[in-house]
Image (cartoon, rainbow, N blue to C red; front, side, top):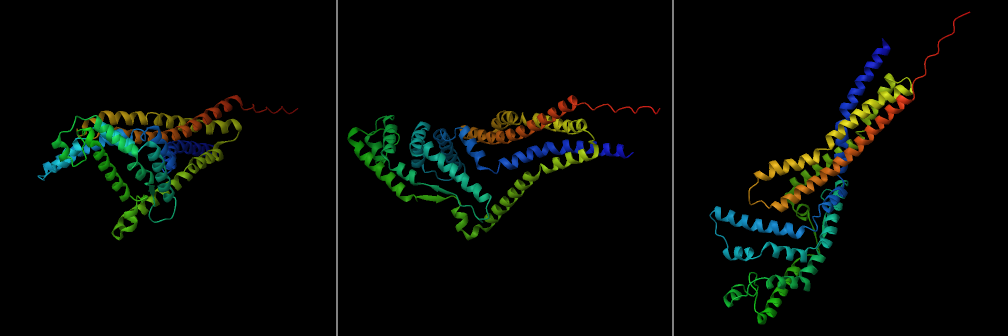
Length: 362
């Protein structure tokens, strides 16, 4: 009776092990990966967002200009036609050239990665408000650099010649037309002076969360940030210790049912193989299914004014982060399934020795 009860409890523990281990694998992978800056830095690099920044900025800028003008017009407000016309005169290619000259990937990448490191360092600290400093020294230099001026001149050279009226209306800063050669030195000088003023107004560095840390009215925001950090740290702590639950269940199985090496291999191998295989089956289609849902159910229902390229890049970034989590879950699930399979093979190879028959009494 006691042996039957022990085996029954071992079967219950094995079932609970399978049911608990599958979500624990995904919870552990998500909590341990999503709180590490390297995951996001790898995702940004794998999606080539630094190299694609000029294209994405051009896509966002053109859509934002159109959407802003329509919003003001729909609300019955007066649209500054001169400003709208000026912005509309810059094509997507113009935006790409300007952004590529001012914000190259060699500058953006270290700043983005440094900001990620600083934010997640705060996440694991006791500081009340995050301090994320971004250096603007290189940006200031590039605004006033000769390369930026030459980029502006190359943009002008792709435009039709300016008339005297267009040149006067532009105020010495034409966008949609190319000034005559005799006017080009003055245009260069005006552009150089404007870029120098813009560079002088920028600080050497900026704290992204400076407004929160310096505004007394932002107490609620600071409290929400602290609460969010507390929850994330708690989840990370739970994820760190979550494998103890499957380990404890395996020990209980051993206590209740294991009486030999062969029995040990079978009692541990079967639930480990099932839990690992099922987790792998769940993890493999997550990212492809997410991409399919985004392409077939989200994109077709978005308004036409949405910046498609930027939205696609953000979706790719989310999928890259999700892929990192699923890879971690797959590694754990694969190790568990392989360990279970090896245990079953060992259990089949090392068969139990037959119980010796007692010799009959003489």
